[in-house]
Length: 200
Image (tube, rainbow, N blue to C red; front, side, top):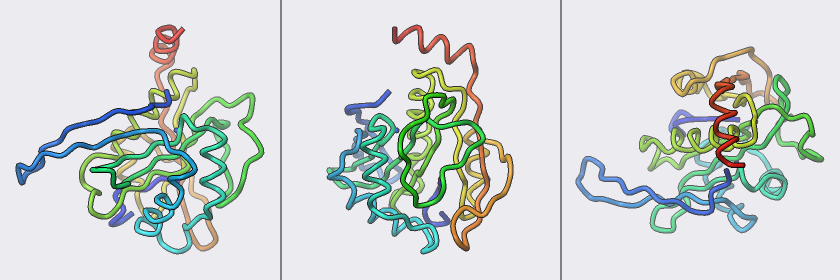
């Protein structure tokens, strides 16, 4: 599921940082890195801030996704404080991973990058973190020749995802008592091939 911002709302990178200067003039640095199983407690805390009770998933789901596709599990940190995460893995276009469920393996015929979850803590919801995550996920997908990003928009967040290049395909009952909308962002085929050649 994807959500932004939390107030109403996995290229694996080893480490990267971005220096920002907000309106108050005080600069700070955001650090992005791949997540590990030790980060799961922080994921659960951010999840509690971002989602309504019907969209809360168990720790085993996040632990498995990190083991299954660590390259697509990204975290954002400010002064070592865990403030946001993105979880994604290859999947089949048009198929939805059931809510709060474990998956045996990544399909050999995966053709898209499925965004399982993007969430940002309340205090950082307006800093463009979700947009940076999407940029990273696009690079992950392109490096593997995948042709789209997909996911399920919840809590009336589809407008934000539309501005990030996603289009709504259909509505669905994603979680018990929690509706969602399947969204997709197609990637340019020529761009994906070019990106893949650069990595070979």
